[in-house]
Length: 214
Image (cartoon, rainbow, N blue to C red; front, side, top):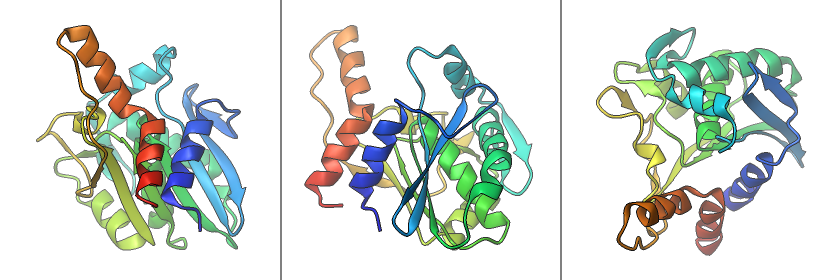
């Protein structure tokens, strides 16, 4: 079984591609066999990709079959990816859904859809993912809490992404696991922004988890 640090490393690699599947222009994932597991890795927002940013900002709640009301951009991305990969997932391997940032939001939706079809319980491990579920959506929380072998959402202290979209409109489906220490931010708006970007970096998640032997 891959460690959580190993999964963070795969999330970092996924940003560079190539991707196994791309749908709706920007929703992407890699299907990576690793021993007895098949890891579905969703990369996060590419800083130079306007379409990624538009998906992040498409936050109006919308209903989705099986997983309930979600952030519209994240729910649509997960729905479209699931339609593309569902027949590619083997029944003889444990499925692991993972992702960083936007990728973590997509991984959460994919895991929910996987479980809703009555498939074998997957692992779900995300890093710095934003909120996905609308406040009144209890379906997605029930799916991932009851239907996964493990469900871990890591959130680095100081990382701003897990705090959006805002409460009480949206919510996380788990309490999450806080790790790391915020980077010191010198005075100044630009320096503070740089520190926040650093707190969100997937490589910092990987380093924190290595230090914790996770």
